[in-house]
Length: 306
Image (cartoon, rainbow, N blue to C red; front, side, top):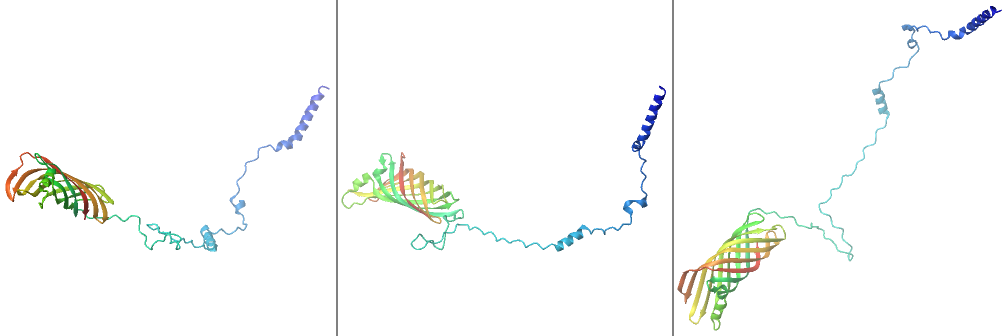
């Protein structure tokens, strides 16, 4: 009985193996694939094929021919040019506001251009007052009173700021305190005069502005005389010398072009080196001054320049 059990078991195992053989057959390794013959490829059959597509350029040309033409480009008007000066507003109705004329001028006139250097001429006048002493012990006020002066300047304007030129001026007035006392009464005539000739240089601070302030310096040779009549007859005293400092300052108001009108002031300082005395038209004394002293003139007045 024991020998029969293993035989039964082996029989069942063999039957189970035989039953599972079909299932195990699908797990066997497949045979290697054989290459397709050249004539038997699926792509090389005799089936009809569509015609080749046209090149892209031809298709684009056909497409462009069928496409409608683009609309023309829009034209824009040219941008207006802005005027240099703002145009005036239109005129108001009568009785409702100011009206503007047909012409419109800019607020500022164009700057005038001149050629440099150029010649300048000026006329000036004023009132001159003496100071200091004529000779030692003799004040100017005793010999000369206030004088009315007239002068002319002629020179070159080297550039807009610098002027260099010559001047001549003279003055007339009454005698000083001592001479006036001697000449009082009757029909006696007393008077005084002065003159100078020299050179000056001016510097203008604002030559292109409506108001042009300036300063100057000059030197000159000068002379002065006083004459009168007393109980003994006529007398004359003449002085000559030079002015070593002539300080000027002024302001010019522009009128038109290079024409200006302004005011000026000057202070001169000098010495008399020669003196001559006459009595009844006869020279009684003449020569140099032993000890020189300083005298001065202060002048203020209008000035017109061309």
